[in-house]
Length: 216
Length: 216
Image (cartoon, rainbow over all chains, first blue to last red; front, side):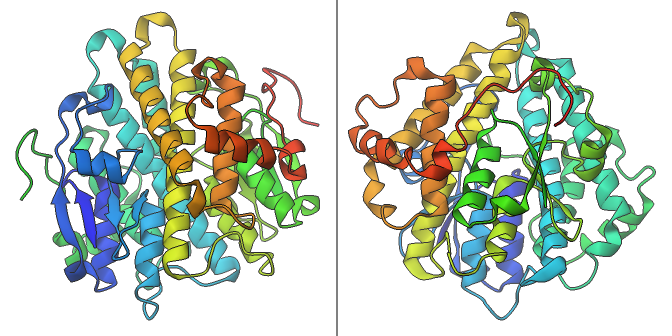
């Protein structure tokens, strides 16, 4: 398999952590991608093979062993799960599954708002909307509050909702440390301190995307 | 079950079409929501029960019979699928499933770009970015081109990728008729003309969200 990747994207990280937890990472060839800062508000020049594979032109993009290019982290994780049916990252049925879908939706919603906030911050000041940034900051705060309050519903064996939540917390440290997300979220902070020490998390720590360069 | 809903949202429509195709719509109570135009760039005043249920504060939001609130259309569709295992809307495994994940990711990517474009168009002109609108228009065009070219991979029995694709085409007619999406996409246009006649599509035609009003 081949994964279009950057070290900065939390949705790429979600796919990587899932791959490691499912013992699939050795089967994935990493294909770095480069994102000039105008990605947030303009069509940038894409590598031709990347945009040909995925017309959404976003990362993560996974090319399966069958040569099918899949966009969007949860859809990619669905494929990875199908390659290792021994270690399930979602409860199979019932209220446990509904609860897992809930937490995953909240953690993903927070992550998506963090990326939209990042894209807005990359605009030049004339078209930047402080109201929009505030809307996203407020949404992120509500989501983290829920994750803090509902921790008891997703503790236990490693799961996709935990992975999305752990990465959301780590991305706050990476991009928005001034938000001080741990404040008044002591349950989530204590949980994250342990979760962040998993080998899959340590191996995928966020770093800035190089602005230019050749893949390799 | 209870679904927070508007007639304008294509992601709500996706959930509704899935519910109808799975014969579950009679089990869902519709809860209308109201979205003043500043939803696109500001935190608006939410109904307290809505934001308490889903901290992402987006629609669709489904409350399951167990009382669990789920955000995000694919996660909601996962739950609905679990309630009717006779009629599967995704192939269960193999390359057929990878292909379905691919098409779903492309159709969803197009829909997401249509919503982001709508939100941008709702900003006042001083903070509106024509570059960003153009980026989204270009992405939508690439996605529709792929759906047109890859139609043979998703024809056949009704499926979630078909539903997302059909709704994406219909949303173009609803919000962006000037884009003339059918031009040079004759395969997709011919397929959509038939798909749009399904009872599930006819029952869920898009309409403007009322700006104010009481639920009922």
